[in-house]
Amino acid sequence: SHVAISETTILKIIREIELILGVDETWFDKMLLVCQELQSGFIIMEESAETRSAITWHERLTKNISYYIDKAKILYFVSDRAKALINLAEVRNNVKSVADFFHFKHGINKLLCLALASKLRFSKQNLDNSIASNNTEQIEIYEQEYAHYQFFSDFYSETMNNFSLILHPYYDGNKSNNSIKVKDDIKDEISKIKDIISQCNIKDKYNLLIKSNNQVNRLVCVIDQWYDIIDVHIENLSLSIEGKNWFRNYLLPKTYWQSAIKKTSYSLIKNRLKEQLLFCINSINCSGVICSVSAFIVSFLFMFCAVAIFIVKYAIKSIKIIFVVFMIVCDFMWLIFFVKIGSFLLFLVFAVNHIGNCY
Image 1 (spheres, rainbow, N blue to C red):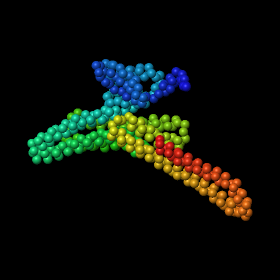
Image 2: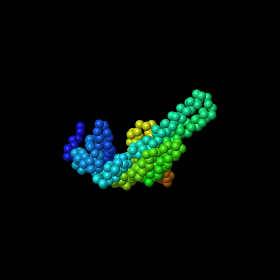
Image 3: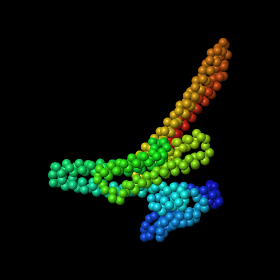
Image 4: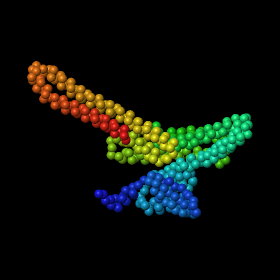
């Protein structure tokens, strides 16, 4: 069976959609302007154009969005730092222009990747030649040189991985991040890149690191933008204050890390993200310990009081043994009833705790 949905209902839903747009140009036999809605992955526009000015972008984009959706709210744009694309976001649409993380890393990779690989390769060739000629002095020199470049090549790879692990709305599981902290962390990693450049004597002829460094403010603003959007949606939920706090501090971080893990196939990053998910789950479990212990204590006290009242009651009324025996038999059913209630409460406590651990 299924429930039919009218076209007017569907149109009402999609007309209220909020868009996060990624824009860029690409070239095949001609230039194409491409726009993708980043939340859904839907390609809104892929059109050839003679120019890539802000005016051209705005006209084409407005036409294509209105074709699918009558009224859409653009939250922000993500793009490289081309002036036309920044103008498209901030001037034409009056929203933030967020720096694309790919282009931020691409500038650093373009500077270091081939340079380090080249130095490492030539150092290995020199080492092999010195070993072949059995030149002990040269072997020692090139062994140290090769180890030097190998160390900084590994250091470079680790630093680039760190960039990918910093730009998230959470850290240490479910702790809320902010643009200031993320900016400081990225600056620390950039200082490591500067150290690699210096130690390996690499020339930055095109100021690629400076260009990447200039993108940091535009890059980290996505964190605050993300929380602005999330806070609005959480406030609109029909939940109590405690429910909203639980959603914001526990369910949302857990769901976020699970989603992030699915989006990467790189095993090293995936394992680091799984660690974050584990931190998050542990924090959820710890938050439930107090409630579980409290419920356990209440259940235990409930059974203890029932038994105590039972004993005291019949100790006082033990004048006539026959009467006492009769009362014990009658009220024994009540005692069983109280014990069963206490046992049921204990069962609920452990069942809820077990379900929390599973999810």
